[in-house]
Length: 114
Image (cartoon, rainbow, N blue to C red; front, side, top):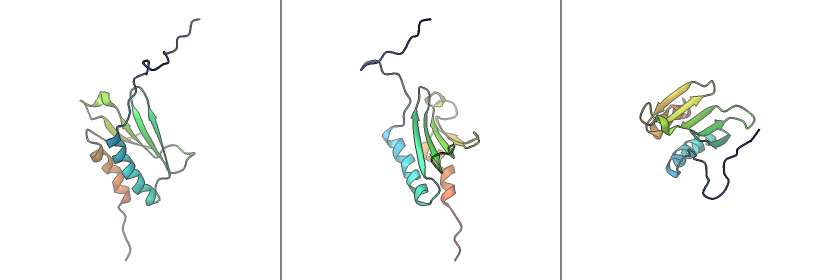
C-alpha cells in the first residue's frame, strides 16, 4: 500500500477558505458586544478547503451555540454567508455578512424594567 501526502513547502500550500480582515472585524464587533452582555464566552475559527467557520460557545467544553460560515461556492446561489444554530438549522443565509448577522443581534435587544 502506497500512501500519498500533500507536498509540504513554501509553494505547496493547500487552498483554504478564510475570513478576510473586514469580515473578521464585523464578526468580532458582534462577538465583543455579546461577551459584554454575558451571552457568549469563547470562540473558535476553522479554515478548511471549502468553508471557513467562526464558532461561538457559551462555555469552552460545549458544542457551539452558533456557527458563522463562509462558503464561496454558494456565492452565486443563496449567498456565501450563513448563520447556523446549535441544532444545525440555518437561521439566515445571504450575500452580505452584516445582514446575515442581524439574526444574532436580536439577542441583544431585551426589555428593560423601569
